[in-house]
Length: 124
Image (cartoon, rainbow, N blue to C red; front, side, top):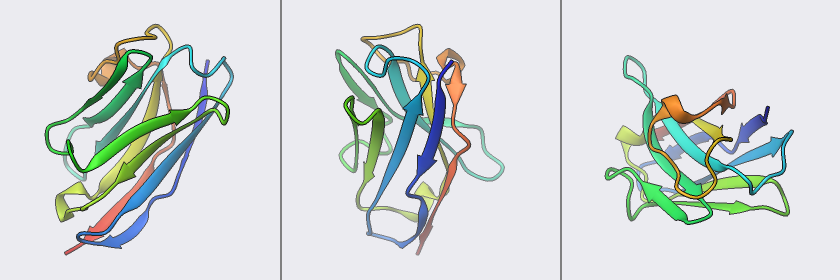
């Protein structure tokens, strides 16, 4: 099991930036893939970005604006969000897929462990 705690959410004007952090504990960090997902009111949870040893993947809606990275020494994964839009408003969740190391999945069903979420609100 992996415990995940997100931070860094908040209110930001359109065009602004935020960096989300997700601190992990419980298993050797770096041995499993990590992902970020988001859920807006009335909508299903959707994939944002993921990272594994072999690289990263992004949803089309955030590609070029968001960057996922990880610091294995700090047991932390980050999501740098630039050029934010009102449609990015959602609760953002980080998740760990402990069965996958290299190629991260975009399906939330593949992820075993989830954080509690952090609210991101972009004002237009």
